[in-house]
Length: 307
Image 1: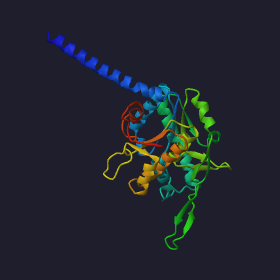
Image 2 (image 1 turned 90 degrees about the horizontal axis):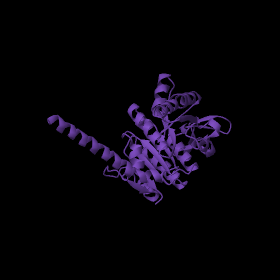
Image 3 (image 1 turned 135 degrees about the horizontal axis):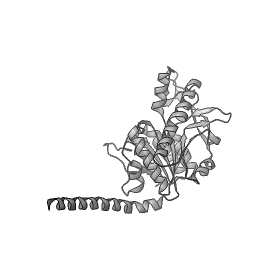
Image 4 (image 1 turned 60 degrees about the vertical axis):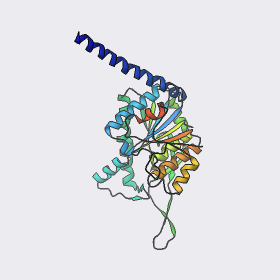
C-alpha cells in the first residue's frame, strides 16, 4: 500500500511539473508571435563568454531561430586578444578604453576573432542543433570601415590633438543584403567585428558598435547587448528596467551612467535612432537570459526605447 501511495505522489509531482512547463509555453506564445520573422541582433562577448554561459547562449540562439526569429550574432573577444598578445610578447596599450592596434596587433586580432572565437561560437550553436555560419566584416564587404579618429587634450599645452590608434576603425557602411541572403535560409550569421577599409586594409572595431550598426542597417526589432553587469543602475545601485532616449542622455550627463556603460548606452541610443524598435542591456552570466528577456513579460536588464 505504501508503495502505491509513493507511486501516486510521484505521478502527481511529475504532472505538476508538466503543468508548470505548459504554463510557461502558453505565457511565451504572445512573445513568439511578436518576434516571428523579426531580426534580433545579439552581441556576445567579454566576461559573458564563459564555457557555461556559451552553452546556454547557443541553446537560446537555436531556440530563437526555431521559434521564427532571425537572430544575428556579433561577438567580441577583448580578453582573449589581450591574452594572445601577452603570450606573443606584443605590447598592448589602451587609450580611452580603445586598444591601440598596430600592424602586428591587427594580425593577432584577426587571428583570435575570426580564426578562434568565431569558430567556437559557430561550433557551439551547431552542436546545440542550429546551423550557424561564421563571418567577418571583411566578407563580401559586410562592414566597410574607416579609421577611427580620436582627439585628446595635451596635459602640457591643454590643446586638443589627434591620437593615432592604429588600425582601429568604425563602421562606415553595412551591407545588409549579405545578411539577408543567410536569413532567408536556416543559417544563423555569426559576425567577427573586423571591418575592411576602402583600400582593403582590415580594422579592429568595437563589437558593441558593430552590433548597433548591423541592427540599424537591418532594421532589427531588437538589439541585445550581453555584458557582465545586470544593466543600468541608479544612484542607489538598483536596476533601472526601462529608459527613454532622453532619460538615458540625462543619466549620462549627471554621471549616473559612467565608465564602460557609456559606450553601450550610446550604441543603444544610436541603434534606436536608426530605426531599431528597442535595445536592451543584459547580464550574459544569467542562465538563459535571452529567453527571459524575449519570452517573458518581466524581461531582464535595461530596455532603451524611443519614448
